[in-house]
Image (cartoon, rainbow, N blue to C red; front, side, top):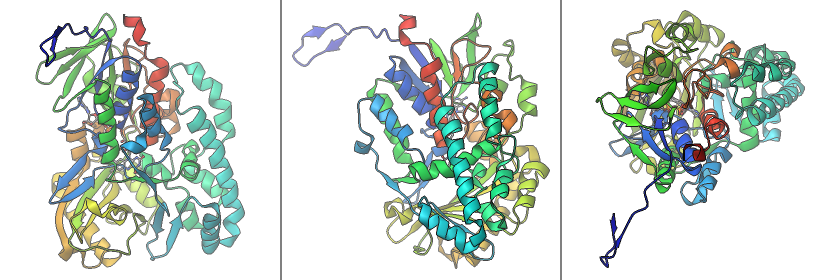
Length: 509
Ligand SMILES: Cc1cc2nc3c(=O)[nH]c(=O)nc-3n(C[C@H](O)[C@H](O)[C@H](O)COP(=O)(O)OP(=O)(O)OC[C@H]3O[C@@H](n4cnc5c(N)ncnc54)[C@H](O)[C@@H]3O)c2cc1C
């Protein structure tokens, strides 16, 4: 019953909308919630942590704001669509600003490649490193465009539920050299060893090694050029907050500190979830944004048979781990760009250490984020907020991060002091770390991987866990471990697929 101030008593209309539970409030889960809400579902997001975002969780400490994960925002139309679905304009809530250059790629000898979306500037940068490679670079970008049109624009939100879906696209993917690795195709077109790195490192942004990720992921350079690289004013957390506002505006609910222990299944269909507290929540459909590997390994009842059996999950290749160090300095480093990729002395062998040998090397490559270049409000006045991310082996390596984290951090600090951030050790006033162990315990990431299943051909499209469970009716999956894969555009696209496969809300009335 609703009671109005004039004391007239009005019977509230019962909410007859079908119900959807979304497990996890990462970008995939939040986007799924908005889409289901727009389609008439009453949505409840159950999030294990005390705040939304998942990998995009925001840490606030000592006056600094640190975006926990994604910082490079590409394909912004995928976000704008979500606001449009709610009859709103994204620009009223979040301001996206283009970043240029996209990144500065710094080689171990100090040489820097300014990587941008401007074709003339890029041609000039390529020529500065190797004039003979300009025509090959142009041909590579032609292939990247074709890959982007096919694999991202056409197939990125296509459900690969049936094997025939894969068979249908296979000839085209073969024509586009999908059997090769990203490094393989780049090397076909570009000869200079440093340029080969510049145009092949992108799979690392989605959890893959350039030497084993399918050439299909060579689509990223064109995707970045086509839609740009953006920064959300206030940090990526502004996008998370914006989506939460949309969900609440639709009448959806987000419950924090709600750790799902089990997806409830009756007569072959998902009927709700049980939390670790023992509480159960019923729903007409369940969407898991929890790690796909963990969903199949831990969240389904033992009695439910599944294509992704425990053994299959254990044998699968999981992406690398990430060591992330967030720190604030009491001075500003004005010469440091917004996004810097700092390469170490080794490339192929370092990647072998990370992905194949699974050992923690003494050298490293890293990504340095300085959001306070664009938005000083993320740190106290006169200070800089940073994070540095270094790819490492995942937990299958057996690395004991309780012991290794601090020495590893110190080595990174020393390298940064010697290069881009002189005197760093004296300037740090706040600091925190995330290791693969935190990815496992905080986010329930299988083997503590940074990006869920590794993006190799045999774990892509139909070969990846499907967006619609093959075995359990009314169970759907979104997020990095399902099709099309990791990265913000990938997980937003996985939620887009729900529009094609989740039942219409009217089916339940
Ligand atoms: C450090 C870092 C930097 C990155 N940088 C970029 C970038 O610049 N650009 C880009 O595009 N991508 C980037 N990525 C990748 C991108 O962030 C991820 O692929 C994407 O955000 C993953 O979203 P998701 O929805 O799949 O899952 P997540 O963000 O992992 O969210 C899953 C959520 O589910 C919750 N959960 C798990 N299990 C349960 C359970 N049982 N019950 C309840 N809740 C549960 C977790 O707590 C989590 O909140 C980065 C990733 C990392 C880690």
